[in-house]
Image 1: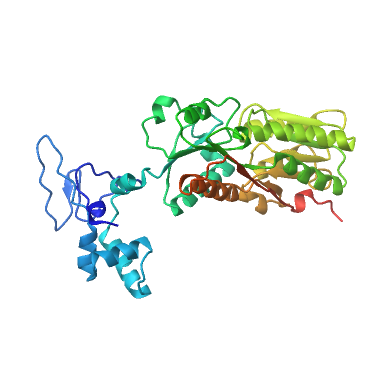
Image 2 (image 1 turned 90 degrees about the vertical axis):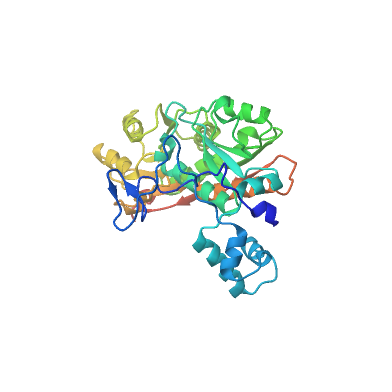
Length: 386
């Protein structure tokens, strides 16, 4: 780390993402008042006061009583330093508010260390995916794992147009659950930006994938129902063009045919608890014979699904076995606790960022991906009473 790379100027400095907004700090003024014991800062007509100078590496070294080379090594995790010296340098830097010069680092590395992130579904309501326990977990885990590797996540709304992201210095973009013929995937690949998505991009130059095995997920849940004596399993899933939901529908059809059992599947046109519960009620009342097992793939609150089953005269698990594809922690606290099929968003995020780093930092050229196994957490709602 050279002095030129670490010496920051105040011109062009930016405010850190996540800085506290709206709250007055000690010694600051609020509208119509001044903090007791402090003088109001001078106001310059027509232009704001210049930002405070950034803390430089040499300032940290002087404060810590160490050489600049030693402080640089301590902050970068390099060099042969004692734990005490390394901790002293890091604590001094933290206390003084030192930040490396991001612009200089970008110039040296040739990238901005920014990763775009977009969820393919819900283009008409771009931020609704954050209401989903699955996507909330996936987004949080992706951001945290990326940050551990030195990358920041930039959230892009579903349906983002080329003009909205083309000037951002994105090193790569994660496209979670793209819908069929997703335009953003085509535009990103045309712009030579690496794309990390599901298996719909398999084999395409510049694209890499991490996915869960939809067929194995369906078989895992339905085989469990079968072992518990169910012979009329019903499925509730979104009417969606994502690869996962299309494969779930096909796998359910194949499983029922292979076991000689009736096929009952109800699709949900819209996301959200209301539409999903309505679909659950249709599944429970369709046909001359009521289902004796229910797999809800469309995301909904497990307590609400359980209530719907009871409203229609079902005793869970006496007359109806129940399992939900869900990351909702309320499933553990219902009576009975609801069996869940987890798509393991934390593991998907870790595998995705690991693949991303191998491409961006280690020069991996070949396209490829990783398949993450799902997990069935069996609870009382899907076990026949003894």
